[in-house]
Structure formats: C-alpha cells, structure tokens
Image 1 (spheres, rainbow, N blue to C red):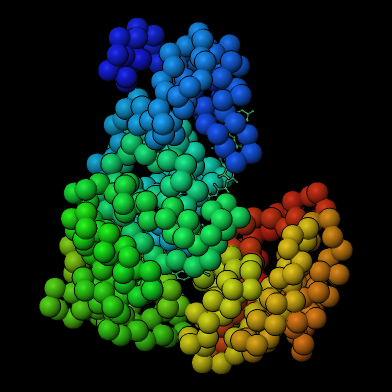
Image 2 (image 1 turned 45 degrees about the vertical axis):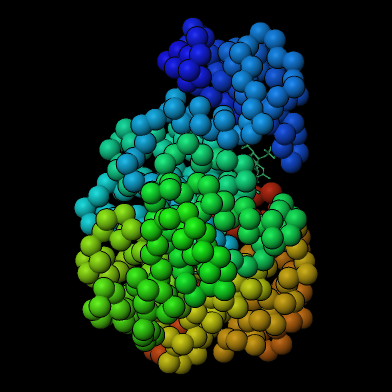
Length: 471
Ligand SMILES: CC(=O)N[C@H]1[C@@H](OP(=O)(O)OP(=O)(O)OC[C@H]2O[C@@H](n3ccc(=O)[nH]c3=O)[C@H](O)[C@@H]2O)O[C@H](CO)[C@@H](O)[C@@H]1O[C@H](C)C(=O)N[C@@H](C)C(=O)N[C@H](CCC(=O)O)C(=O)O
Ligand SMILES: Nc1ncnc2c1ncn2[C@@H]1O[C@H](COP(=O)(O)OP(=O)(O)OP(=O)(O)O)[C@@H](O)[C@H]1O
C-alpha cells in the first residue's frame, strides 16, 4: 500500500508496516514517536529512519529529515488511525469492556456466549488473544496499538466476526485500540487502582470513561452494570451522546436481576427482561460472577443476540481460567476452586463470593509472594482467618526470599492457621480433609503455571495439582 493511500497525500513510498519501538522498524515502516512514562520515542526518530522508516508520526515542531513527517497534536491517536487503515478490515462486531474488575471474565464470557449463538468469536485481554482453537498471550491486558490492530486484522482474516476486548485505563490513555469501530462498550465497576500511573481517582475515571465519551461509536450501545455507584455517570454520558443503553443488575432495566440463589455448585438467577421473567442456573459461583455473566449477556444482546436464548445460554458458561474456577470435586463431594486473588482485597472478595455457597466449612489455602509488597502479608493472614473456617498458609512464589520467613509474616496475622510450606502437600491436605458440605479455595496463582523459587520457575498449576490430589 502506498503511503498516499493512508495520508490522502501524494507520497509514492510503499508502507510495509507500523512500529512504535524503533527496534522493530524495518524498511517501509511508519514509526510512531511518542513521549512515554519512561522514555521519549522522539529520541529514536533518527535511528528509526536509519532502519528504513518512511514516515514518522509525532507531535508538531520537530525536525524530521529523510522521511515524511506526519505532525499531529495527538500523535498517538493519529498513528492508530493510520495503522487501522493499513491493517483493516476488522471483524464487523467489536465490543470493549472497561472497569477496575471483571474485564477478563467478561471478555471470556462474551466470547463463549457468542459461540453458543453460532458466531465465530474471539477475545483479547489479560489471558491473551483467544479463539475457539488457540490462545496466544501478549503480556498486556490491552496490547500496544500495533500488536492490537495487527492481531484484530489477523482474526478477521481467520473469519472471526465477533471480537470482545479488554480496554484497560492504560490502553485507553495511550490510544491503543483507536481506529477500530467499537459497536458496544461495557462498564463493570470502578474502585481504587493504578493511581501510580493516573495520579488520582478523577484522572483514572476520566481515562476509563473515554471509552464512552470518545471510543464507542456514536451509533453504538453502552452496556452498564447499573449497581455500581459510578454507573450513573456512564449512563448520563451515553444519553447525552445518544447511544443506545443496555443496563443490567438489580438496578438494571434491560436485564433486571430479581433473584439470586447460591447452591454448592452454582447459583439460580431470576431475571426480568422485556416484560418476562426468566430463571436460569449459572454453573459459576459468587455474586460478582453473576454480575459479569449479566454484563456479558448485555453485550451479546446489544450486538443483536436474542434475549431468551442468551439468558438460557448462561447455563452453559464455562469457568474463566483461574477466576473462581472449579478445578475438581473432591471424593467427599466438596468443590475445589482456584482463584488468582493475591491481595487482601481480592482474597476477601473471593472468600465472600464462596461463603454463601458452603453448607459446611470454607477451607482456604494461600501464601504470599517473595520480593514483592511485604505489607500485605499480615493483612492477607488476617482476612483469611477472619472470613474462612480453616486456613492453611503455604508457599506462593517465594522467589529469592526465605519461604519460611514469608509464611511467618503471613502467620502473624493468621492466628490459628496451619502451616504447610509445600504447596502440593497443602492442597492435598485441604482436598482430602474437606467434608461433603465444605468448599476449598486455593488462592494466589489462578491461571499461572509456575512456582518461582530463586531464579527457577518450577512447573506448578493449582488446577492440575488439585485434580491429582482428588484422584
Ligand atoms: C506504563 C505503560 O503503560 N507503559 C507501556 C507504554 O509505555 P510508554 O508509552 O510510557 O513507553 P516508554 O517505555 O516510556 O517509551 C516511550 C516510547 O519510546 C519507544 N521506545 C522506547 C525505548 C527504545 O529503545 N526505543 C523506543 O522506540 C517505546 O516503544 C514507546 O513508544 O508502551 C509500551 C509499548 O507499548 C508498553 O510496553 C508499556 O507497558 C509496560 C511494559 C507495562 O507494564 N504496562 C502496564 C502498566 C499496562 O499497560 N497495564 C495495563 C493495565 C493492566 C491492568 O488493568 O491490570 C494493560 O493494559 O496491560
Ligand atoms: N464484577 C466484579 N466486581 C467486583 N470484583 C470483581 C468482579 N469481577 C471480578 N472481580 C474480582 O477481580 C478479580 C479479577 O477478575 P478479572 O480478571 O475478571 O478482572 P480484570 O478487570 O480483568 O482484572 P485483571 O486485568 O487484573 O485480570 C477476580 O478474581 C475477583 O476478585
């Protein structure tokens, strides 16, 4: 493709690709030079041109010699728009999910629900680029703009028509997904996070809400978890812009959750929609998984899905990897869950989610990582003993620290807890000793596949180990 086709100019040079890192520039590349948090891409313009860049997108006022200079007050946005023209076409239906928690769960569930409805669907997020056949990790929740747009185009070439992706606040601030038409956007919730990057809550919320104020197509639909205190602002914004609205939750109007009955293995949901009442058994547990399932159903309905069929399909949702994932049912009948919770808040949320489902004891196995925030260890111990009935403190990526010393820190807050350093032995004790009405929670690793000891990553998967212990 000629550069002129992208810029509407007259440049004859052939574009071969896009890059925002000068080390990835090849002959024919359009280079985006942006000021970042750690480095300034403008410092690498000359290197990029030496490597063959034919155009540079950057802020106005620079001296660029030897390549076409595309100056723009918002170079990240301009770069993304040009890259989108280069990489297009994309799937017809692309939806984005933002919020502090629940993004990964929602993209996974939305993809599953679309597939059940017969669409060729994919998702992009923390767990990677996922299709029916494979999952490829990118390392970020919202990949950088070139990785994102090239992957989305690749999915379209494979025949994917429906894409759900996570829009992190970093991704939104850095215009990583610009240029892709977003047909529906969902908001899950807002709580404190990432203030190191955004500065304060107002800036963080502004970053998130850009999904609705600028990224969502003006003829698109806003899907909102209406029970969150910040949802009113998203709803107001959607109304101001004339977007269609789908609201879900106990305060929702499109899908109103009027009943939730936790059982040992799932939860019955009663949902009012379009003047009818539906009941469905969600095979996932915890109030927030019900919330994520409803947001995902909202997205599917927002993109043309049938209301009754979508609600019925909730009964067939598979757990998201490492997110309150039921690994196995112990011989006694006790379900064993694996969750990624590795902070005090997340541990408390995971225990709170499971507690109403347990007729007997809630048994928690967890540890704290080495070479990381030491302050959270005692608090995690406190949270565990306060909310669970039996607590086993074990190892979780001790890294270069003494594993016993880490456990000791956790145990300072966890009076009455047991200590079993070896993670396999700890999981084994919990799984074998759980009674028929009990629930086991193995927290901390979720989808991760290793135990980091020193500089070594020893293969370790909580789900596999739980299954082996239950066999
Ligand atoms: C804070 C942040 O988001 N950083 C990301 C961002 O960096 P930045 O634009 O600030 O880049 P920088 O390192 O200051 O460099 C500026 C520019 O110079 C370029 N450069 C830099 C060095 C060089 O030698 N040559 C060169 O060309 C860089 O490619 C960049 O374009 O752009 C880089 C290239 O795309 C990303 O790799 C980098 O992600 C870092 C590794 C990261 O850890 N990001 C995390 C915080 C993140 O984005 N997380 C979110 C949210 C996760 C969540 O919700 O939990 C996510 O979406 O994953
Ligand atoms: N709707 C929700 N409301 C509150 N907490 C939630 C919700 N969904 C998930 N969580 C909590 O957040 C954790 C992470 O869930 P999930 O991975 O879906 O979120 P995320 O926004 O993608 O976060 P990350 O990018 O860190 O993976 C869960 O283990 C749970 O503790």
